[in-house]
Structure formats: C-alpha cells, structure tokens
Image (cartoon, rainbow, N blue to C red):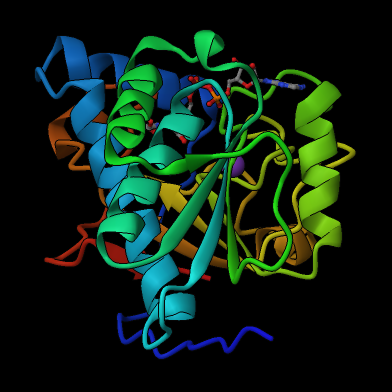
Length: 246
Ligand SMILES: NC(=O)C1=CN([C@@H]2O[C@H](COP(=O)(O)OP(=O)(O)OC[C@H]3O[C@@H](n4cnc5c(N)ncnc54)[C@H](O)[C@@H]3O)[C@@H](O)[C@H]2O)[C@@H](O)CC1
Ligand SMILES: [K+]
C-alpha cells in the first residue's frame, strides 16, 4: 500500500501558453544551436525535476522505497534515467526496464544508461511487482501513431499494476501535437512536463490520464521563445524550479 503525500507548496500558476511538438523541437534545436545549452543539460534538469516530484509526493519518509523506471530509447527515456540516478542516490531501490535493447538507445540516453550501469543499478527484463512508484519515460513528444510492441505491453502492464505512475513530459501515448490519447496510453497519477505544457495537457478531458500536472523549468531563455517562428511570450518561473499548474 503506497502512502501518498501531496503537500506541494508551490503556487498555482495560471496563464501558461501551450506548445506543440513542432514548437518544442524548435526550442530544443535552438537551445543547442543558439545558446549552447546542450541536450545533456536539459535532460539533467528534466530528470532532477522528475525525481524531486517523485520523492516529495511518494517516497519521502519511506525506507529504501522501490521505484520501477520504464525507459524508452529517446530523450524521454533519457530524462527518466537521470531521475533513476538521482533517486538511487537519495536512497531509493531503483529497477530499470528498457523498452528496447540498450543498443537502441539514442546517444545521450545511452550515456545516462552507462552511468547507471557503472553505479550498479539493476536493469531487469520483466517489470517487477510491488514497487511503490513507476516512472513513465517510455515516449515523450515524439510519439508516432498508437504505441505498439513492447512499449504498448509496458503501458498496459503499468496501468494494471495498481502502482502510482509519474509520467515525464506527457503520459506515454499522449500526442503532443493533437492533444489526443492513443490506445493504449499511460494513465498517470501525475505528469511532470518540461518548459511549457504540451498542447492539450491541461484539457480537463484528459485529466484522468495526465493526473496532476507539474511544470519544470529547463532554463529556456525568454528571448528564444520571443524569436520563434510562432513567437511565444511566457510568464516567469519566478524563482521556482517546479510549479504545479493543474
Ligand atoms: N527541451 C525539452 O523539451 C527536452 C526534452 N527531453 C525529452 O525528450 C523527449 C523527446 O525525445 P525524443 O524526440 O528523443 O523522442 P521520445 O523520447 O519522445 O520517443 C521517441 C521514441 O519513442 C518510440 N516510439 C514513438 N512512437 C512509438 C509508437 N507508436 N510505438 C512504440 N514506440 C514508439 C520510438 O522508438 C522513438 O525512438 C521529450 O518528450 C522530453 O521528455 C529531455 O530529454 C531534454 C529536454
Ligand atoms: K512519458
């Protein structure tokens, strides 16, 4: 039985614009090309925020809590692997389940995975029973069609596990361009989305799958948003790393 804490003290944020997949791809590209903020840096911020929400809401005060981390081969998986490292360092018992063989990991997530191997963190083939929390890092904004194969199997397993699920960026199966949920999609208790809420995430119609929505700062310069193909004016995080927005 998981005891859940929800004593998040950060202010309710209103008025955040949404961003779709194309916009976020543009942000990611210009973060690197214009500002030299490498993917590793963004991923570190993303994973730390995910770990912080996980710890504060579900794990704090528990002795060696068990966390299952479902990681896809892209940037979403990479962020979840960063969170795995942070949670392990904070005392959690972390088990990693990869959606695809380690050889299929994109270069930066592969680097994160190598660190975890060096730390001796367990990597298991079958998702284990009895964890206190599942991190969903299977697919982020680069979903293409309805989830298939082992990714779909892991989504179905997580939804049926009875364990709380914390999703990174979007619940896997959520389409950040259309705001729609594919079948199957992760049914999360909470989601930590990055930089700006992805299009449709705040729609009450998908709240059952998104859960409580947190917004994490990955330090996108306001000038980047202001000079995008479709400029976005953003309110400030005002000194907070993570805001609860829905
Ligand atoms: N600036 C940002 O927003 C940042 C984004 N990051 C993360 O990176 C994510 C985007 O990463 P990527 O573009 O690498 O891609 P994703 O990690 O979103 O997923 C891509 C992978 O998902 C799999 N996939 C896609 N559709 C599928 C389907 N229908 N069935 C089964 N498998 C499917 C494919 O193997 C594909 O390689 C974001 O959502 C976010 O979590 C962070 O890593 C860093 C900063
Ligand atoms: K996800």
